[in-house]
Image 1 (cartoon, rainbow, N blue to C red):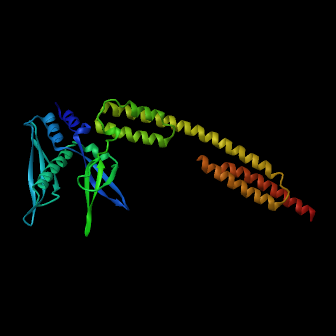
Image 2 (cartoon, rainbow, N blue to C red):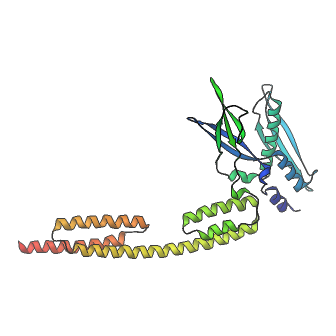
Image 3 (cartoon, one colour):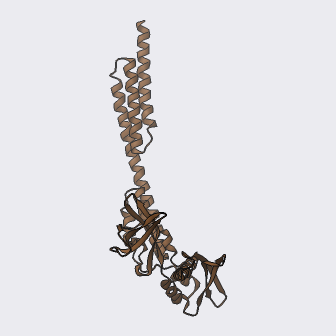
Length: 313
């Protein structure tokens, strides 16, 4: 297995059962609880991934406690990969949530190993995920667990409050698959640039997470074709809307010819300019040409009225 194949396997997506969710932030808005959860790969999944790619004896983790004022406050982990040419180590670290709790120290080591794995590309695609708010309810106690998880909200001088929350589902793009037709179909079905942008965003996330180079190449071709198609349609639409706006300008010009006084003529002209401007903004086209046509009619009619008044005098 060459280096590029190893990198592709390292960065491959995980099955949902290899993903765990943790509370990043939580609280109460009034009497309504909220939980913001983030996904992580499990330590077991990290170990299995490195075993699969490099073999049980082809890699090893090393841990260093982070000590401050005589207390272990965190942990550094370095994952070393051994190759025929050399050995490479990548490091990351995590703090312990409770400096006196053995379980917290073990959790710090586990988290630091998972973060070091991300340095190698393992599970890095999860950082593409948007903020996820979990379904939740206020619980009466730590044992009042209906949705599967309990989070304790502590406030100084107030009793603890409990939130029962449900583990979120992974987004569609973050689930391993080799068939990207659903994303390509959404791209083909897009009728404007906004829809295309949304469809491309989901496709890019899924393909980037899967590290499928063939799908990436196909996406680039499809993207270019769809943009060309939409730009062509948009150009035709703008031309049609421009013709319609010019026709409206001619209709307004005809109305101006029936106005007998200069004051009424000016008011009608100003009203017509406003109508053309608003229509142009609504259709996303320039109204300059249509307004100029109306202005020329207004100037011609005003000039005739001025000449008529001059002759009368």
